Amino acid sequence: MASPLASDSPISGTRKEQQRAAKILILSDQIPHSVSAGNIQLLRLFADYPSDHIVAVGPPVPAGAKTLACRYVGWEPPFTRLNHTRLVDGT
Image (cartoon, rainbow, N blue to C red; front, side, top):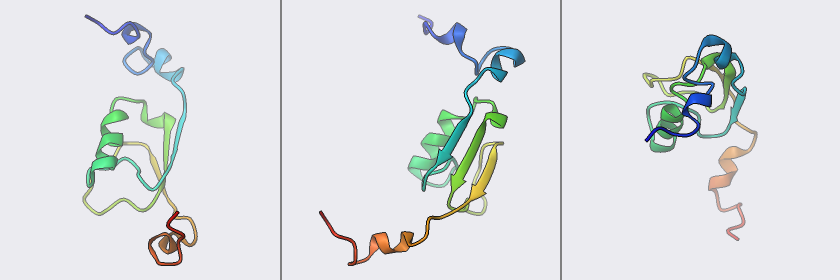
């Protein structure tokens, strides 16, 4: 049984339909690449999505990792490393 949304999907349609696809900003410490589990899930999720509609902002991609054809911007929030110290309240 085909998905009821399959024919309306902007991902699998013509170029005009793909241009209607939503633009996506991924701002996270988990960005799409092929090295770790959460990142691989994002890589698979957006594999068929129009790459010109995605921007991924997060930590640098590890060397040798497979990535999407989208734009990647390396960024880590200041003081991120303090999240993993005894200075963080455990509650």
